[in-house]
Every structure is written in C-alpha cells, then in structure tokens.
Amino acid sequence: MSAQPSLTSQKKPTRRRWRDSSLAYVLIAPTVAVLLALSVYPLIYAVKVAFQSGTGESTRWTLEHFTRLISDSFFLAALGHTILYAAVALTFEFLLGLGLALLVDRPLRGRGLFRALLLVPMMLPPVVVGVVWRLMLNPDFGAINGTLRSVGFNTDALTWTASPKLAMLSVIAVDVWQWTPFVFLVLLAGLQAIPQEPYEAARIDGSSAWQTFRFITLPLLKPAMLIALLLRTMDLLRVFDQIFILTEGGPGFATETVSLYIYRAAFRFFDFGYAAAMSFVLLVITNLISAGYIRLLQRQEAA
Image 1 (cartoon, rainbow, N blue to C red):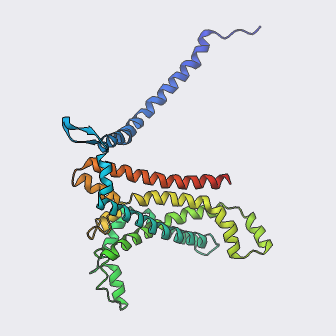
Image 2: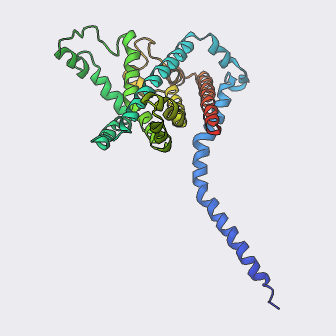
Image 3: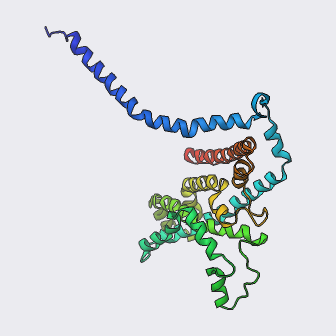
C-alpha cells in the first residue's frame, strides 16, 4: 500500500498559495490607492458638490444646480456649440479617413512613407498643435494669410480666430487636421483584416468597383467604423485644450464649448457645484451616445 501524505506536506502548498496571493495584493496596493485617490474620491466628491447647495451649517441636498441648467442660455449655447463642433468634425474626419484608408490599402509605391507622414499630426500633443496653428492663423503674420496674399488673394477679412463666422470653422479645421489620421489608422486596420475570398468571388461574378465597395467592403468594415466613430465622438464632446489655446472660447461666445464653460464656472467663478452638475450632464450625453454605438456594434457582431 502507498503511504499517505503527511499533514505537513499537505499544508505546504496551502501556505505557498497564501503567501503568493498576499504578495500579489501587496504589489497592487499602491496602484489601487492611486486609482482611488485620483478617480473614485474625486467622483464621490463631485456627486456631493453637485447635489448640495449652501455652505457650512446651511448646506442642504438639492437639485438646484441641475434645474439651473435648463434656464442658463450660456450653457445651452455652449452645448449647441459642442454638438455642432462634434458633428461637423466627426463627419469630415470619417469621410477623409475612409478615403485615405481606401487609397493606402491599394498597392502603391511609397505607401509606407505616405502612411508614416499621415500619422505625424496625431502624434503631436494638442497643446503644441494649438500653439502652432494659432501662429499660422494669425491674420497679420500667419502662414495661411501670407500664402494667400502671395498668390493674389485679399486677406483683409480673413481674421480666422477673431471672426465669429470663421472661428468655429477654424477650430474644426485644426481638429480635422490632427485627428483624421486616427480614423484613417483604425479604418485601414479594418480594411486589412477583411479576407480576400469575397473579393475574389466578386471578381469572378463580374461585380463593379462600386458594387464591391457597397456590398462587401462597407458591411465588413462596419465594426471598425463604429469603433472609430465611438472613440472620436467621446473625444470631441469633451474637447478643451485646442479651443482654449486657439480662441479661448471667443470671439465673444462663438466657440465656447461645455468643457470650457465648466472650466470657467469652476476656476474663474468658483461655482464648483454648478460646474459639477454640468460635468454630469455632459457625462450622461456622452454615455448615451456611446451606448448607441456599442449597441450597433453588438448587433453587427451578432449578425
């Protein structure tokens, strides 16, 4: 008969597992502490500030900050600017990104160099992009007006960031310049992941280029499209740095977005409760739109 394992030998694996698990908890404890300090605690504090009014002993729980949003014409205007900015920028970034992805997906000479150059704007920090484009859009000594004057255009009326009519177009153009490469990169990855068998079958059946694109490329590219749209929509709705550097929300209130208005309410007027309420409204809008994209993505994967 085989000998039974001793009680000491049975306890050794248990002790080793307990020691390993304890070491794992000790190693991740600093990271968890930092996450709690930088995300969880600020979120709890923001909820508290958003739903409280008054100071000291007169503090009370209320919806005053949220009801104030409905009658605040400046917030409604900032929300309209944010939606307009996101919708126009997203449309151009998607169409340009898709066109570039279809172009680069073909066997072209110098394709690798062209792809690398396209990614340069995306690699630059938004602050650097804002400063460079603010200098380029300067009506007196900027490169844009200087180039137009050199070919005979009258640039007296082209005050790009100082004109209420041109300021929004200017900040949208800068965002399109910087982030179209991101959409291009996502869609190019989606195109290269499509198998070649459907295209070979289409060529055998005599399908035209448009039919191939409409019935093969677009349906198979939809997951990548939805991912690109989801990520860019979330980013566009909370845009702050580029607009702050280019126009600071001006001229007047022409390019003021919700993020800029939150910044002013919190750090210029010290109305932290109202700023927190606006932040939660923006968060809800972003989550609702993101949930719609995710729902469409899940349907596409289930189909």
